[in-house]
Structure formats: structure tokens, C-alpha cells
Length: 187
Image (tube, rainbow, N blue to C red; front, top):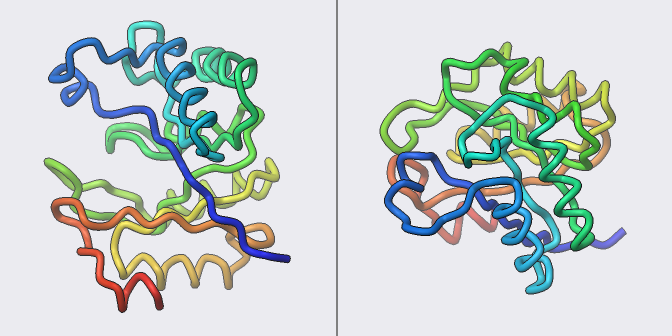
């Protein structure tokens, strides 16, 4: 089996950031249009959060499924549901996207300082998401924000926390995250 390069588009940003961008459309239609454009330009994976008709984050499965239908009507792209979200949500609320017909889901193997706060992913929550992905036969995309998360990801895999081969995405180089270094990224 040969490795395949995954080019992921992530068409969503926090509402406070979106408010600073005139004309941004985070509704299901707006997100689907951006995903379809990205797919035609070469993206083969989309990382999706759940957004409602007003372009606000929501935990409503129907809103997520509507976005999926719009995307699939316009392109063939692998859909990755997000388990990300704000710290005020429960682990179950943060993985509502796993209830939809998706191929991949993000799995964050640790916490990190992020933007204006701490992005918390507790060991119990991580185990819960991994179990839900196994149960639903969804392949995890291990999202590495800090070098220390690599050890957590390896431990999770050794404990049976992922089904078969998994994907790995690195999100380094932003404020309060591990800086990208050639020796780290090529290890």
C-alpha cells in the first residue's frame, strides 16, 4: 500500500474571527460552496465543524447532515467530522458529527494553549472519542498540535484506540503551539 498525500480544507473559523471578515458565509450553503471549490482545486479531505443556518456553531446533527448533502451533491471529497469545540461542551456534544455518515473524524490526543485560552482534551474525553470512532467504524485523524501529543497518540494506538491505520494531521506554527522545525516534522 502506498501512502497518499491528504490535502485538507477546513472552512470554518470561530465566530469572533468571522465577525472581522466582511461577507464570510458560514451557513451550510456557504461552507458547501467553499468545500466544492477547494475539491475542484485539489483538496481531497474536508475537516468540518457543525454550523447552523446563521453561521453559528451548533450541536444540531440535522444542520451538519444538511451541509454534508450539499457538499456531496457538488463533489466527491472525504468528510472528516470534528470532535473539537469549546471547553463548555461535554465529550458527547463535541462528537455529534460522529453520528453522521462520515469517513474520518479528528482525534486530538491532548490539550494545548490555543488562541486566547486553553483547548482542553482530557484523557477520559480522548478515550471516549476513540471508542465512539471504533464503534462507528470511523477512521481517526490524529490532530497533532504539540510535539508531546505524539507520545499520547502512540499510547492510544497501543491501547487499541484506533482502528487499523490512522491518519495524522499536524497543526503547528501558530501562536502558543509547537513551532515547525524540519527535524521535528521529518521524524
